[in-house]
Length: 340
Image (tube, rainbow, N blue to C red; front, side):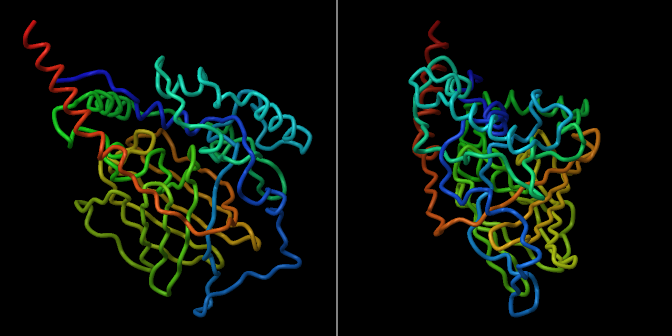
């Protein structure tokens, strides 16, 4: 049987990628992100590679796609940035019981489960190369996700229909079952989300580990490895890494057809580049390539800023505990329909 989805996950993903009213950030201000190439030297691990280790956050008010107000402008002046950030803060309505933002997430029966104390997306636009960016997407130059292919549109439509199935636990979305995080915070790509956008990086000569705060995902990047056969699929894909000068390049393939990023399929190929640009900042650049989904490749770029640790446990049990109620409600609906 099928029923109306309580919280459409695709809609939630779009909302997470959109601008959100600003709050006071718990992370260092972006002024600490200015490059210090003249006075700063890249730290090294014992094996001589750049040291990326530490706890980082990618919180930012910069949306994934460029807002219409900034059409044609990849960056803004300091004055324009302050005006945007000020307006964002002043129009913050998430603490209201009738919050329009919550209504977009939860529908007409919005419940104030998220507020400014809970959410942390920072209070400023992302700064790269000393200027503030208007979108995470840097290519295409218009700051927009390329159009979807016809195949992708059909795939997404089928995915949305499957979200309305309640016949089995396995019918429910992965994030609802606490298998992986939502909004692609885990990556790749590692995209800023509504909250819990903290990452811890640990390096050894043979591996790089990225601990993701959201849903306690852990990415294991095998250095100088090779991908398994194409028929081997993993929730977060298979990641291998190598160094290009001072940049860690991470090549990820072998995704499943369920861990879709904006509708992507199992042929998704992601290339990430992480470069330590100062004591407080890793510049993150990621290219998305899936010709079965997008009409061309596209690239995002934004900073990961150092923040105080530790990364606290994200005990994702909400979906697990609610699952008997979700499926039990469906069975009651089945029974009610059968008696009519």
